[in-house]
Image 1: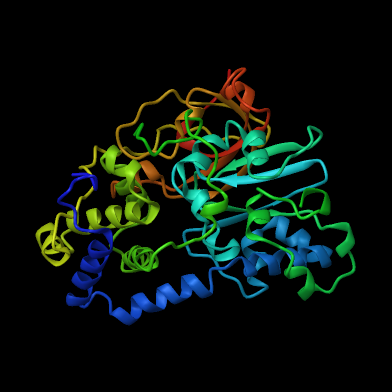
Image 2: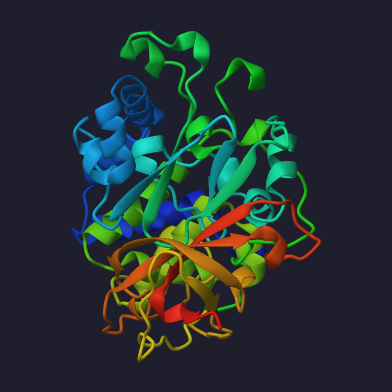
Length: 200
Length: 205
């Protein structure tokens, strides 16, 4: 039954078998699978979210729209979300607040905006421990927050998606938008790191 | 279902494997497995709730030993077999070995009737319910009280949608819980926000 079962075909053979069965039934073509793979690798990347963050840092009106209705606001930058992601909630960090996202039940993420989730996000350690031991887990991951910073953990249990709007580092105020984009990381939009010099 | 997938608050896991776990895909088959399930949704073979539930139904030994994309593959292949898109025999022949699938599903359930609507600021209690089919209430909030701090538009009710039952879409509430109330004297202080379907909630007395 389980993959611990010695009879199980190697997983790459099982994936190939399912793909082949689909192709033989004309349900998909190999090129369709290639195209989705390409899309995932090239288009579902954190550079999208970085664009959103840089715009929010430099355009107060955009930031207001983003915090009001994230899904509508990101379309202004040419970004899209799948139909079942009905709502994007943007969580603004402040000098005294750290928002951090997880999915305890599976691996839900706003992947078209902040990029596909990294391996650790989908691992059992993060999924089990973050909701209960947030400050400890963040410290272990290199983000040692002083106790004056409150923590809000967001468990993605519905098809509402979240992204964190990090605090803009002081030394970057006045930078052009394209330069700001370069400093925004996927981890800062998940909320396991901060961009200010103090925390790097 | 109270399956092994419901990990929030479970103890005994070690440090997050952060440094070595930054990659999205670790092997060339992984993005293909991811693409196949995405195409399956687009083809209308299943909805996202059916897909999530198929993964949750995996034999716990398999679930815990498989990597993320093997779980994705197994859930999707299970639905393809259950819905008659492909047969298990065909998959095993093409793969040249056994193709482990998830275990059969229990029954789903319709929306709760009647349901109460809530407003921002309301104190709510998560119903003390035990569900055999799919449910999107993480076990750690069962029976616990929190405060509604936001409301999001109506979604399909997962407990029904995962079993292909007709149901009404219902709102979800952003409920803020105090980690110290979820796990008294056994959690780091924090506010834990969970998206909770209306059917799962009662007013807190």
